[in-house]
Length: 118
Image 1 (cartoon, rainbow, N blue to C red):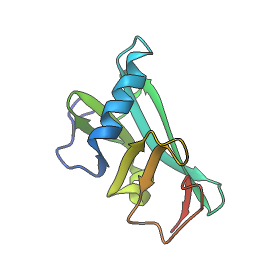
Image 2 (cartoon, one colour):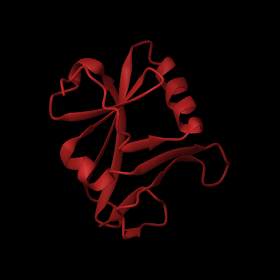
Image 3 (cartoon, helix red, strand yellow):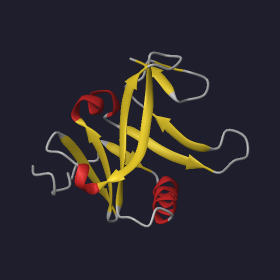
Image 4 (cartoon, helix red, strand yellow):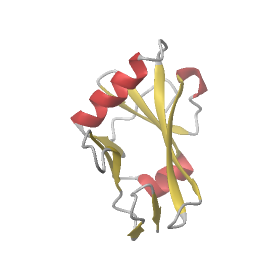
């Protein structure tokens, strides 16, 4: 797969609410950005989720790209080993709101939901 082709697999799932929110946040940037999702060492449970907007030009051949209604979710293959099947949701609840990660690979999750263990 070339870096400009989007994978037809949905290794990272976005709920409609999460897609609406990331598109809203991207619109404030005045650029055509993708959302990079990954993991890094740290957090209460051993690994923590990371996500941030980045320019589409930074997508590499080592990345997997998941396209949602013209919006790209990008994940490096090493992180995808821990995130495959992840569902990213969004809630605007006053308590406990924000982005929420449901990871079928996690065997433990911290109370805040931002880190996990495998």
